[in-house]
Length: 195
Image 1 (cartoon, one colour):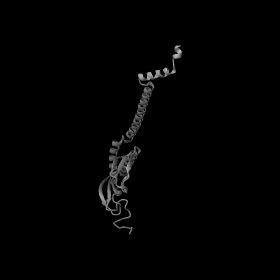
Image 2: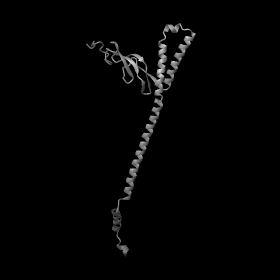
Image 3: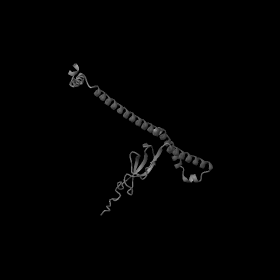
Image 4: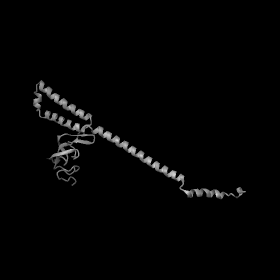
């Protein structure tokens, strides 16, 4: 008859007494699972950021690795250009075959050096007629010119070059002074055309 005295209420109380003994193991597993999932997601994000940063650094290294060599080559190219500039046009026209071969060789060498620099990403900086940009240009002097907007590059003394987004050598330039401010084309020489 002991079976008859057994009630379902006693079965309900038994699990409650187990719960009183310690924390719920299912909740502990859920918390541990959430913590591990969070750590996994953070690790994956860190690895992705590391991969992107490494790719960017490798790309920068490829692009800018020759910067020092390119600067040195620009000096040599400038010397060849200056050698050609000091030769008067009359001397070129009246040169004998040997001298003409020398002139042609210097011109060819200078063009080839420029081509090789361009092949490796070294590009000239456009300066003449542009608004002065202190990040790309180095002002050497000012030119009083009321016909040009103030702050416009009017003369290039030495060409500038960039590799990728970086300036290897700024362009040395002369900048207009005394003209209208850039963007103020309507009011030239103090005359107000709106009247």
